[in-house]
Image (cartoon, rainbow, N blue to C red; front, side):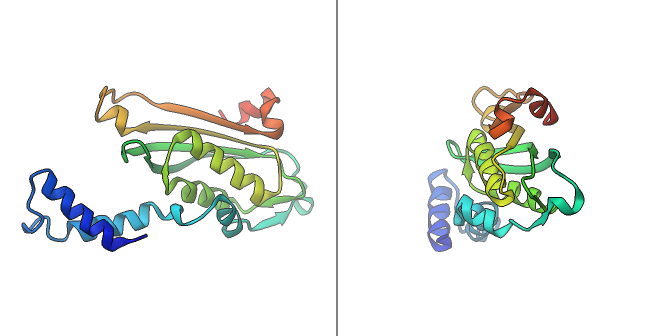
Length: 186
């Protein structure tokens, strides 16, 4: 990430909206925005494969007898819409997968969701990214992801409908056809 370019362009943006980037309250804003982008868009530095490698710590499912679906619900993430760079917030992710010989460490599931969200994103793609990463990291074709969230491009601008929520679902493998597996994500 080129933080110097971000600083330059944020100064220009402030000028373009009629602000003085040298006034006391704004002098450090371009640097703070560059630091924020580096943090909240960290996931742009990694491919799905690299994220699966980073958070792919697994344990043998034979050791704990788990070949049933594993479901983690209400993982909180936020992201930024690639269309408006507007905040997608109040987002919860439910992830389910069927182990095929190995299970992911539970914190790794939440870390995968968090890192995939740290990109300019579409909610639909975020669900697909999480499913693909979980599939690779856990070594299973059977993954389901449900995401529910609010989008400030809907709630704070445009239509300004603050109660609107968007739900997306991504199913891979057995989750595509098994209605009982799909219900586990609710």
